[in-house]
Length: 475
Ligand SMILES: Cc1ncc(COP(=O)(O)O)c(C=O)c1O
Image 1 (tube, helix red, strand yellow):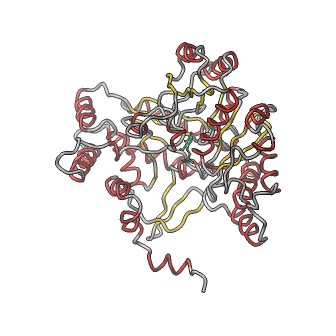
Image 2 (cartoon, protein in one colour):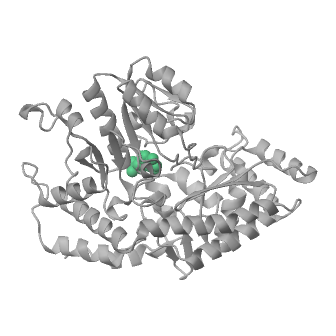
Image 3 (cartoon, helix red, strand yellow):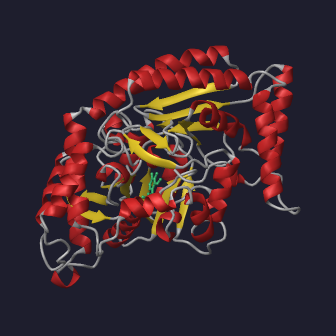
């Protein structure tokens, strides 16, 4: 008897959080409870999630950027079903799989001419690991340069290029490397000049906080990397496949990277897949002869389902013109959100590129609010953001997140299929939530105090005022 999946799910529906808490990650379930994200979703379509009661949620997280084409896209489902029905000879290993060749060719067509070789991976962090390894192999240097606040994944190699103490602490010695501040070319050059660095790795738009570099920065970075023979690695894991209104974010500045890391939305959110897109001269320095033909390799990297998902996703992006749509949606949202900054003194920056959205708050000028702002930040540096995220969820069923540890930035990465109606709904809801935060005393500040209390209680008597666990953790 085959497993009856539908029956299994029906019989256990509702036990989601209990099972996850018992066997997977109890700290995460505590966070979900604390911020009111402990929902039970039973279905998803496009940019929406549905819970047990049939209530609809607007998915502003988009699986942290894995669902650019929207969830459960019918065309993608068809391709995957077709792939399964064909009983393909996947993962023979000593073989040259057709679908991998086809997807590699398609990806190469989307990138600058010098990028002509592909290595398939299973995740973003694996793409970064591979890129760092290739860079070390090709240059004979060990050092890795990266930006303050960078996020490239959480396995040990990628963690070595993580610019956030919260993620790096307590895991021992990592790869040799150093971080430099975004937009500081002097600091970068003084490091590059040492010629210790194999690679400078950068997210064209930084995920933590949604920081968009000054316009001249990345072209100058590229020039300096060339000058000091450090490979220029662009991490497009989050920004790739239309997210920022271009197929890849580096196109905003006409860059010519040596290595590009991708993952997340490449498979339309169904199958883990990623890729390293790089120059043949790097390949030749690493895969030097037949003996080294698999000097870097993996088992699942070129599997048929992942490759089929990648091919289908790229076709959907093209056919539905989702890249152009993301760009237009970003402009629309900016136009609607910017005026709110004049009305609300704490809403201070609106950083939007395509549908990569960062909304930053800052200290108020008026006396009453100043006091409230200080109080809430004294309780925890990341708490104010939750005063936006929590009511967006509880009152308006919109998923969003705080964009990093101890920051007052709300971040969203919704599917690129968002409609004008969705965006209007978000703007109206955000307006109401932000308006509420500008009333002190008022309900929003009570939510803040309540959150601080709950987190304190859940951690026992010796706890810090509020751990950053209720703020933001990934992406
Ligand atoms: C820019 C960037 N690089 C790498 C990663 C790691 O990807 P994954 O979670 O698939 O390992 C992420 C994940 O959020 C990311 O945003």
